[in-house]
Image (cartoon, rainbow, N blue to C red; front, side, top):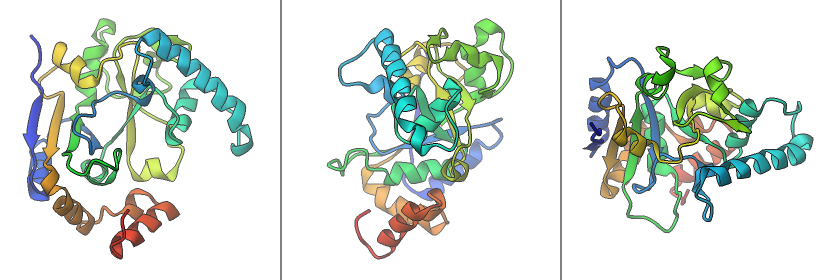
Length: 261
């Protein structure tokens, strides 16, 4: 039977914390924050304004990887050699990939949901925190392999069907990436890596035989966003914590002195 996506309204930090604590006994949960409620769980490579088929996307991926390798060498300490590892470096710098960012920390996800302005002209949209059970997800999408493990490493055999230039598997998998920057460490970054299925993860979930609540959608109403942001900063999740560099410090100083960030 199709799954129903569990959606829950969150009005303040106390409700959010209570919800997270109520799910604390779950083996492992990942979180993703987004400040545009209509945005779905799909990677940047699959968001092209003209292309729509998997063959087009994979052809584009090959061209993007080649261009990145050609032009990035002067800025790298070592040469690129592993396409899977290269995807994480590209993702870090905003190059379109089949990776979708998540975090192991629910408050980091909340920070991103409340602060990242994907659409600066949109000031009335709700904030969204997606929740994923990565173990249940992987065991379901890899059931054809009788997979009983957990989150996949980039060095595991199961990653083979998702390598650039040889993408054979269909549905996205939850993976641990390469910690290639202090930001990923601070943000407890983890990822889902997409295959040939270009549907958003929530649509895959709704149409598949997943365990209940493998994906959950929390919604912060737009009129609660400012208060929630103040609350999460008060408990220590400020810009310089999430971005442990001068960019993060700059954002934090702007916010302290009430300049637009």
